[in-house]
Length: 498
Image 1 (cartoon, rainbow, N blue to C red):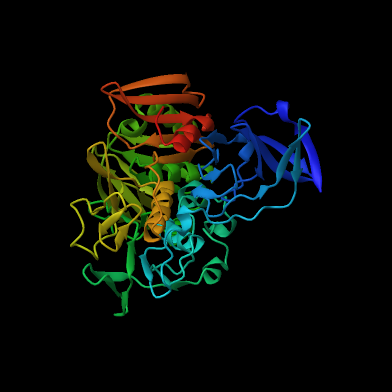
Image 2: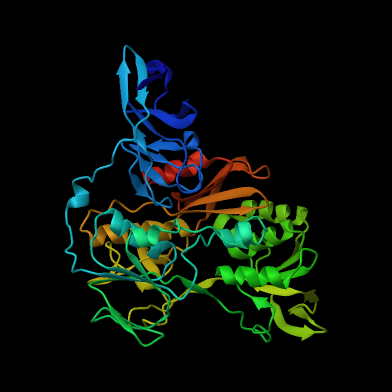
């Protein structure tokens, strides 16, 4: 049955419009003179796609920048791991008609370029964003051989970004982060979970030794182990009640250690640290932050934006100790005492250390660089048959190598590794994007974190409605925005800073 929806001339080019058919929402958009009808919500977190950006034949999610083909809803880039439904459309006598009957998505010519034999196997070290995305993308692209996903965490893969944004704020059901995949997805995709730690790797044989002494080998080996929190090199950093935040168990221990009316001291001005400060403060917990930086995020966002975020924290009751370092941590009368380098002392129920991370690549010293990362080529290979994705991948850009410690980038790299294994072409490198959410304000960044010497601001920074473009030697190198999701969506969708 065809449903008459709207006049063709009423649709503006590249502006998605939400419509309903029998109470079921869709988005309709005009692109290149053609009309397309797709699911109305992003399968990742349910973002309203009528607010998305249309870029070069794709639709970019406004919230977390998943990218879909406007033609058939095909998933182009994560963080979504499933496509959109697309629906038959016809234009008759100037009217747009839609059939509410999802069309099948067939493989493109590039996606069937190479079909590995079922004798081939893939071993993936790490079940975080990059590792999980690699596994499910391989199955999506038609890989038929065994896939093993190795990670010491007993939990099924989950959304680590929620730990500092919602779990610590008490906004997640059961204080648990959401799963990355439906409960039965691993078994349906025939992905074997091995819950052990990798203790050694032989690059020549592509074999890994596990903590239970087993040795696992694969025709293709994917290294996506993530990172470990950096420990604070001060006396008392190992005391009970001193925490880092990397896993769901870490979040549980933090919540168990401090009541809503208790006091948490957070060391560091990192994104994890400041998100945790906002989350705990929203629970009612008294929060003090100790940071080397006088203004948070000044090197990432610029001083003007950093000052606005600092005021936001101060307005919500966070105590800020900027330009200070921790001298030592002690246990006193059943509580913790944090001594600062200026002689002040802060009593605390818990101390949370958020001073950065280091790649968890200790099992493969032969491939690691000084920062713990692993150099990769354009195909994300460190050596033939050994691929790297996520926090430990050292990517080349503008004549230098850097690691991009962003959730979405980890998933993008995982999907690209899957394409490389399948012999599919890899699209040009996209611009890394990430977001931080603090006290209900969302800041987005797109770029490679290159140094900048000049910032051009458009809008009201204090109202969190702005774009701030970063320049280095008059070259555009990054953008920060708030309240304008379409700006960064366009950057991600086109793959260009414009």
